[in-house]
Length: 327
Image 1 (cartoon, rainbow, N blue to C red):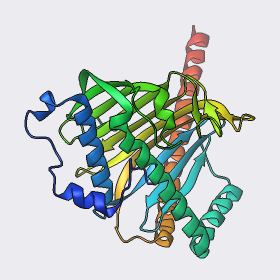
Image 2 (spheres, helix red, strand yellow):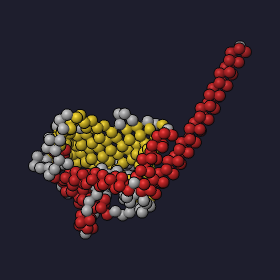
Image 3 (cartoon, rainbow, N blue to C red):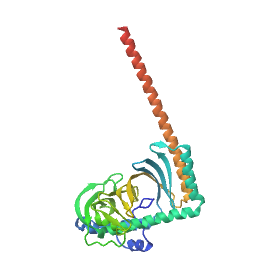
Image 4 (cartoon, one colour):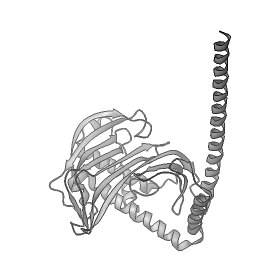
């Protein structure tokens, strides 16, 4: 998953191939198509959509939770990389020292072009790994229909039919690299928006121990789970809205691996397509200041309401005492 949360990014050749084919199914075709064909078309559309690069970029909020902390971050997609600014930690605003550290971290990217290039390279590698997983879905699993549900905010497009396909490992699948190895022991379900032919959800759980790097680099324990949800955030632009990761295992047979986290992405707002990283940082700081001002107003109002409520309660108690004494 790239930090500008999209399901996959691919080369121009795939985009050109997609451009000459129909992106959506013909009327009635979903009902008769085989489950694997539906998955293949949805994957094709994910790939084509991400490569099309319509210039649409967004600012949004990420609420990240782990067993150790809860963190709220503002993120903005720029033409260079995704910029992120932490604005709350464990339900409280950042201290002056924490704000200073966040500003210094972002300024390091703005002033140090080599660091920004490293960040962009890492995002590209993450996207390529995601792409490989995504493109393996039609072949890695066997699929079976299991009813439908209706799209809602944060999952698919509101009102669209979401077709559920349960999946289990395909015994004939031979993963081409350690990246796809995790799929060989996973079962779960996938939701496909049948109107737009996009992936609304993938929910998978490891049913057995799975080695990565063919067991040389380490393994993941049974019971590990990942959940990814997507939604139409406006004008047929799809973004990841929720992710959950829960895995344990070992790396190099010695170091314990424990990953437990959830991310909820919300409040998507479009930003200029030609936004630079430095401009993105300025935009984040401006938005953070507005949020701080809004939160301060809310806190002041809450304090005022609490004070008024306390005063009213004291007045009632005093009245009760008077009535008591008059008797």
